[in-house]
Length: 294
Image (tube, rainbow, N blue to C red; front, side):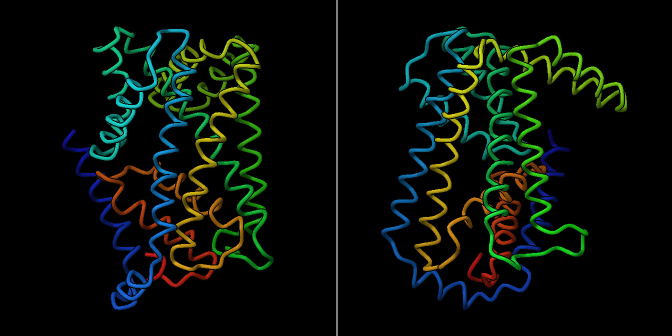
């Protein structure tokens, strides 16, 4: 635990330094003085609504293994997200399954399996957001010669990831034996320690798919995930309005998609550093000055 905390603090510190480098604090203060309050209030409302849709999606995943009311799940979900922010390396993810086991006698493995399914759908939506945001960007937007890849190419790559995940989910729901065979094939190509972790995580994920016995259930969770992430996009849009940033309609999609990828790094408590760096980086693609972005 101490080692993970140290690594996460180092990563967060480096990211925060990169985010702050070149920031002019007088400009930061000026931007904060000019912020419009009404859109920020709407943004906070979107945060609450996002958690509502997350709870509703989680309840659907839990139905085959236990019946828990919305009010109870909202409380457990809130505590779980607090733990995710307070602990490094997303160690707080285990909090919700632990609370389910203690309060409702739902097995820890079953609870963890639902979290694994949630994360796959979140990854699916992140890839879709990046595709929409980047592909809809104006001509000349943020080309990246340093990595030899234009943003349109990156958008196509994101779409490929999205479709690949979707096909795997379909296999996992309709043809679980083929999904298991695919996982074992990929695992053989990797080092033994990584292979073991991959197979273990895959079994947890496949256990969680008990809540998705058919394509209808798969579509249901997918559309619940669209609501979760759609409300977050709306929240980002309100923040842009609060700072009077006149950016293209797709900007919140790409900024949120970049952020979602960035916070998969070993994160410090509160996502300090990683959150700031990737939001600033996303806004930089649209020419927003660093001080304003911070």
